[in-house]
Length: 221
Ligand SMILES: N[C@@H](CCC(=O)N[C@@H](CS)C(=O)NCC(=O)O)C(=O)O
Image 1 (tube, rainbow, N blue to C red):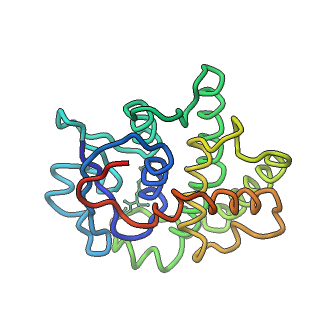
Image 2 (image 1 turned 120 degrees about the horizontal axis):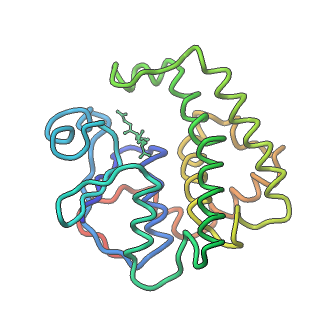
Image 3 (image 1 turned 180 degrees about the vertical axis):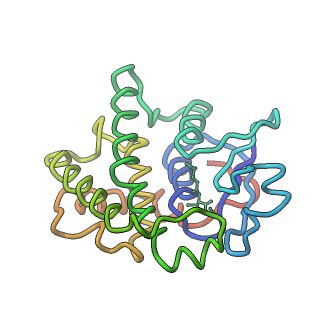
């Protein structure tokens, strides 16, 4: 299989990378796609990999292409050899992981990115390739702040978001907050004590630093 990864720190691309490092037991090829020169919005990427022009994407050995970060992580989890599932080892764990993944995605990750996409930097970065929503910027920040406040209460007394170990929900949220920390410093603030302690806990994991480097070439984890 081939993972198409981004050349610049980006919230979606880092998610399968973090997941793969943390999960282990995986072997694949990787190709870096240059978002910086709009390679992802040009042929052959849009004609042969992802017509939506987004990264990451994963090509199966049979040629079909999988996109959407949560789907890619779930696939990695299933094909990984050995180690422990980061989706869940029982029906209850899997259900809880999917519930929390959807919650952090809808309530925090997407609104934080949509907030950034409402600003001038995003206008310059995408050069017309995305429909942006400057008018919704304030609301996206309010939605994300509310989601983060709720998570701060939910995380009190817990090491990780669910199941007592890092799961897909932790990886998804951490990937977004990590890559957005300089452009959205309001998202992770010391006042949200449980979220900031969880962020430090995730940052301290060995796989987290490795995930800052894009995958390129043969990868064995
Ligand atoms: N729904 C997609 C979103 C992917 C996405 O938005 N990727 C961004 C990188 S964070 C991208 O490709 N940006 C460049 C662009 O849209 O031109 C997923 O879950 O994987």
